[in-house]
Image 1 (spheres, rainbow, N blue to C red):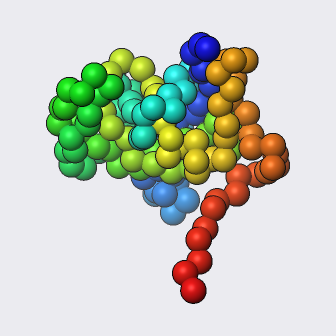
Image 2 (image 1 turned 90 degrees about the vertical axis):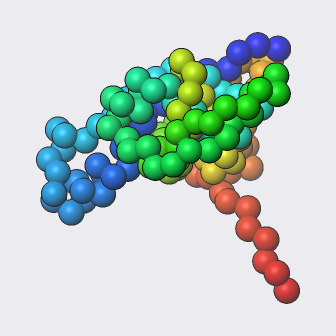
Length: 140
């Protein structure tokens, strides 16, 4: 078993909305590229403070985060970020903590990506190699 990492591009989703409305020039859109740690034990996207600042993200509210050792800490939650990984995209808020970008379960679920710890790689769901598929349960 070992560490799994993937190249990701993070973009401020509010900037992209302004760009679409011709209210912000393309060269003013904040983005950050990282070699992110893939952590199936983490639920959310995690960004260090310096990345949130470089992306120009507003910190909307605070939430309690629980670490693997049981400690709890109140951390900032950002406005949405566009996450691009292996040609797939999703939007997500992020917890601000730590010193590296971490992709957690929600990002993996929404992008329909799987983790191979033995081969240290992230890969598309073999059942849906061309695009992510979201699971939906219908109530009868």
